[in-house]
Image (cartoon, rainbow, N blue to C red; front, side):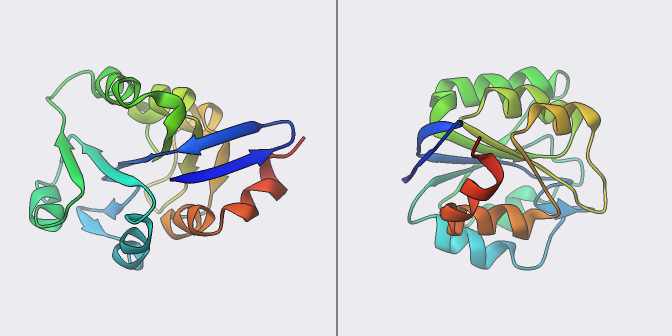
Length: 156
């Protein structure tokens, strides 16, 4: 669990880290450098969930032997499926990271959300739905490893 109280943003108790896979954790189906070590540190504080349409078919071979929850979404309406998944976890207890149009509703409903700018880019819908824009997955995960840093960005 990660807890913080930021003036003007509010108090949050986060239990779940929900991550988009392609474009956020991975580029062309391959996980970005530094992700595994950061997730390894965060798994002691948050339950980790990876949501994906699995465009490249690599998520199970990459994360199948971990204790993270990997959820491959059925084709079609991934945006609604991601949002529903977060709602079932209790959205305010989730920190969500994503970059695509299909992440926008999930990001808007989360207790804390980050739009991740990776080489694939970030969709305008994800950008406007998120609380924070981060310049890469490593920066987003580092904010969770050092949550005091969130104050500088989120306080009123």
